[in-house]
Length: 113
Image (cartoon, rainbow, N blue to C red; front, side, top):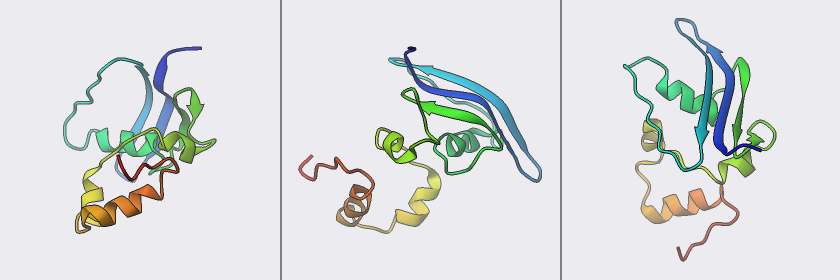
């Protein structure tokens, strides 16, 4: 068993004017990592592929040793992600409305916390 929180192998996605990957990535437990690149270099695409907001053409993604394609809801319960497009969709909600919405995604949601 390894200590990787995240593993991506041969992750690819084709678009009309852009080819992403193949990307291999390993993020170890207890580390801090940064993703840096020019606009249009694929940073957001990588996150969208990792979280299955986009489907890869090829490749696998594992969080905590578990393939996200096998049971994405269990894996996503352990992950926090805020993309810029989320504000456009949810930015007009009050905190209470947003908490009510988000709590549906997390079975172990603790309203008191």
